[in-house]
Amino acid sequence: MITEAQINEVLQSINDPDLNKTIVETGGVREMKIKDDGQVSLKIALAQTGTADQMQLQQQIANAVKEAGATSVGLRFENLTDEEIEAAGGAQAESGGGGLLDENTNTTFIAVSSGKGGVGKSTVTVNVATALAREGKNVGIIDADIYGFSVPDMMGIEERPQVVGETIYPVERYGVKVISMGFFVEDNAPVIWRGPMLGKMLTNFFNEVAWGDLDYLILDLPPGTGDVALDVHTMLPECKELIVTTPHATAAFVAARAGAMAIKTHHEILGVVENMAYFESQLTGEKEYVFGTGGGDRLAEELKAELLGRIPLGQPTIDEEDFAPSVYEREHPIGAVYRDMARRMLEKMEK
Image (cartoon, rainbow, N blue to C red; front, side):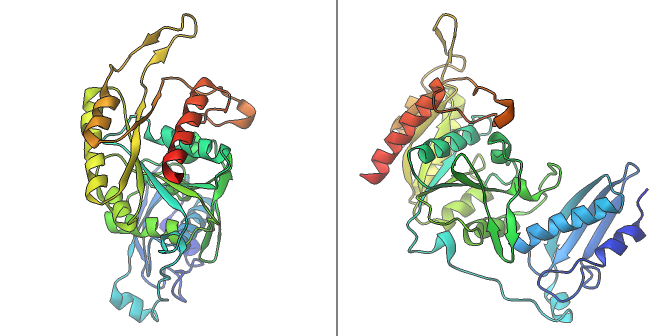
């Protein structure tokens, strides 16, 4: 079984990106736990957290410890104290400003939010993005649902972004550029970060990713009105929002909170999407309203917004050779619903 001595030995070769010392020399190895089955958990302190360099370092540490004999590696990060940074020779200044958050950006931001989980918000995100790309637009997605990231899996993305220096190059699929916390964790491990670190990570997703010229950047927000959603609302002085609900009265009721946050932060509600609106039998054509009716209409009325579309229950045609379990192809009946919805969105945004 792997030992602490073996782990410390491999960590001796890994430098803090902002200090000319290894993470062992800086005292950055805060905690180390080894289970009988070879699972290793580490807490690492760095001069700066929430940067592109940290994401690259995560992979470096995980790979090194696995090569030494660990079966899996769990990582948590925190900041070195000011005294520790000074003792190690100081840190480089954080890069700031610019990127998509520049006030002169031509990119339109669209946040996709919901009051609760389980309403298909991420499914709406990836299919709206794909539909906009099919209309000839340059589109990106930030999977800002940091704790519940799912966009890469939904789009069948298996590769990871390249990180060169301070720049992250997003992965592209179906003409959509994607960045997600899911690219930077090991083996679907949970993200054990607190709010301020997540806010810094989101800032880096805006500023340190080579997005190119985007027409639209879509943000898949966490459900509800917590820290990450609030950070996004604060970062983006101008943003349009899609509010996703199901027909169920409770889902619509809690989705109104997300809409209220958008209004209070002076964001424009682009419209309401009612997902899982009904199930249509392929045999008879009859519609079954599995989750009831009326939730989308009530929410749109309360928010004084347009009901942009009703998405029925269904799933894309699965192609094992071009696997993307949640993206509807252009010819699929539900793909056509997303196409019409994207065109309506473009009419509203570009008039």
